[in-house]
Image (cartoon, rainbow, N blue to C red; front, side):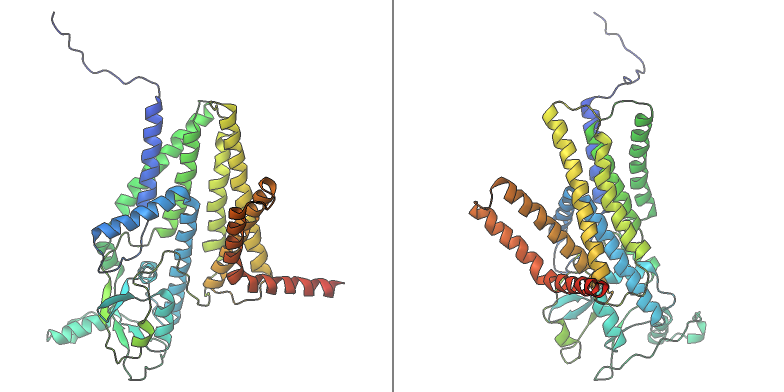
Length: 422
């Protein structure tokens, strides 16, 4: 029997279950993995540690993508704060990419056989008191020219504004940090505009495909609605981290002697800057459009996009009610969180620093979680379960050390205003 050879055959014009699962899982993985812009890792850690650290961040991104988006805008706020302070110090050509480099621990000091990163808070404070200073690009070129016996007149000098006067350290010497240009940061990073654009194009294609099917009244799955919520959060994170170097692993290091005045300040500092680091510095820029509104939009968009599958077909009534209940719970929790944050920011008489704003958000989130947990415990067990009671007290203890002062101060302010009104 002779075999019959067929020519080109088109694929069937239908979608299978494996097609939907594969496309959604691939897009969620791609958007989450490429979105994560981790900070500079400890110098002594190897590739395996770095991969494990990124995998842990990946797990956080899969469990709570809106939390990753808020981290991204927190780092954007920190970078804008560094940029504002650097411009205030006279560095008018300081860019946002260089500020991200500082915020992610790009500058390190070599002390006692360890590479200790300089946090954004210390980077600004130590510059203002003269402990450290960043060399201008022209200063670096001049030093290189002198070491190479090159005439300084051959170096193209930029017109720069004078730096504001800084205090001198006790020994009269400041740690000089070399200038790192945005071009150098782009070459040291592992991703560029082209790679980020490919990821955004893949995300955009899924969004267009989903919107087109909804407009044509074609069936969609709840998995696709969940994927849309993930990729929208990923777009928020991309917008905040667009200027941040991607997976930069080699810091710029300066050695510090044990006699220098900065040496005692380095004891006990971490070897890596955490992702949600908040410097305790005055805000020199408006955070409404760069932090408050974007974070609110990212959190609410992830919650509200679950309602896309409200009228979708589910295999059972139980699955349908679980989906609807979780959608309502997501929105309710985030609305409570935002309401607490807005209440605390309005009534707390504390300086408007980034750290205080972050503390308000953390306290509001902890209080929201405690109210949800405490309410469910009362409804289900009526305080008769010892394990839940211990968890209840532990969760409340997390709220109190950080929030009790702010809450008490806020309630006193509200009470005083009420008495004045009477």
